[in-house]
Length: 260
Image 1 (cartoon, one colour):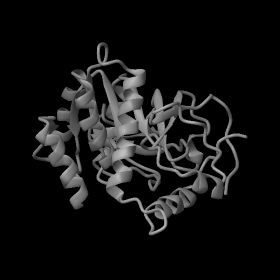
Image 2 (cartoon, one colour; image 1 turned 180 degrees about the vertical axis):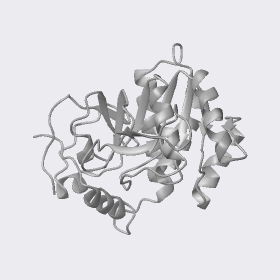
Image 3 (tube, one colour; image 1 turned 180 degrees about the horizontal axis):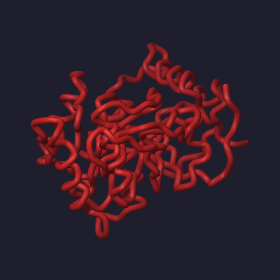
Image 4 (tube, one colour; image 1 turned 120 degrees about the vertical axis):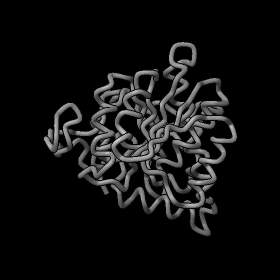
């Protein structure tokens, strides 16, 4: 039986149940396991010998928190991560995760104004080997707003391999790629162009894959090994077996499944 692809509503429902009194997980625990799975996915596909320099792009929400955890683990794995956070999260958990990265001497790109964001990112992309996309999660719906309306096209144009977390940034969680207008980073003034989101080479879906990723053509992993057998059965997730102690499992390149 094929793995189930989740709608945004169902993904949110499962998250809430995991953190309920019955599920008994804290947000910190789920984020730690999710970030570890992201780091392991990148390390499995891109070796530190050939791809040591990882640009970890973090959004302001929980997705960005997963990226911060992943950066810390990648550093422990022997990679050289750099954080890019054009709009850092304001919650206490985000600040603590950022402090943990600082304690490990993981550099954070800084820009004092919005006009410096693109040049800072452009320079970082030139000195990176792979990008970890932890910008938008399953709660995102187009259009992309500033500063990410210029950040995403620049990352896409870099030609670097990209590992996306949960859903490629810029994709609709249920409908997948939907063209929308963004600022033309190569143009002048307020000129706009059409953009469909990032085109990652690798995707790591947390808990279970999302409906918008059912047509994803790259290497697709499931991570976040925190779903109990009872929860899997309740929501008919049909998850594949994780191998041994691995935190991730790769999916075969097959079609999607049912929608709730």
